[in-house]
Image (tube, rainbow, N blue to C red):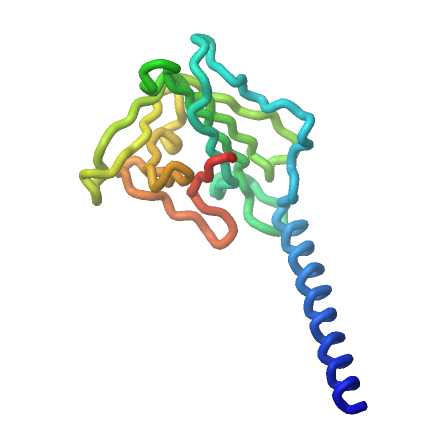
Length: 179
């Protein structure tokens, strides 16, 4: 009987721990304004599958970035919902155009701000002369023109001195590739 009682108590602790984890995780997602699925699967993306020249998408990167200039209500820091769509020539694989979208989430209902232009691949940063950098043209805001390629799936946004920008405890300047 003692073993069954201990086993039952152990199971209750495990179940309680799982429930507590689910509740806490859900609360964190609600407080930070995140959701498990932000856009329903049947809603088409805001960007086309090919650019005006018929070049296909090379990659789409996204994240929620810190917004130091946003006026924020009490609560978690403000954020920018950010997406960068890169297109490459179908035959040569050379970079062609980009589309960038930003939504300043803390400023209430707002429209998507879109910039578009051309991009290139350059080499070298202040700390790594061999680094691969995606460089956007002057149509992009200064703070979003340079991206250090960490891997096929991760970019770091660089500042004007070509150094990775530093985020805060809630959001970073790391972009992840959409799958």
